[in-house]
Image (cartoon, rainbow, N blue to C red; front, side):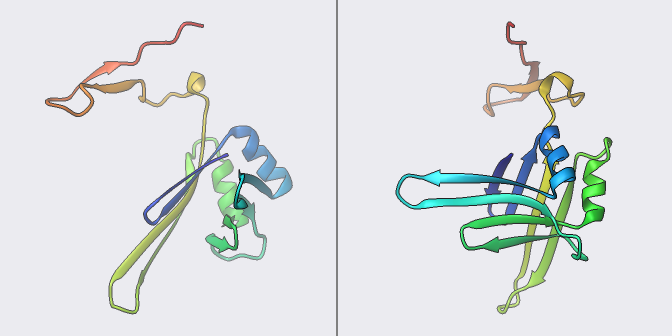
Length: 137
């Protein structure tokens, strides 16, 4: 499982094997160890009594809690992931947004998505696309 945090978003990427574990065990957990400060963990878990999925921030943990219906949705072969979006107005009257999501991380060899193209020139000047060359096996 991989996690990416940026601004007000948290993205989990799980393999199909991890999805199977989530279906069977109800949770998948990863731990990030540091030599000086201990550790923190990140997880995806199914909470049977929850009416809406949410991102739970606990001491030393970030946990995406899914409803059983969200797990069903994630388990569908035609679905890439599930998305938890929240919007609220803070005490100063500013509208705030956050998103947490979990997506399936499919192996590149079986992926049908058109991600085989990259930009030539790396953002400088006009952009043309070129295919990524296959790595020798």
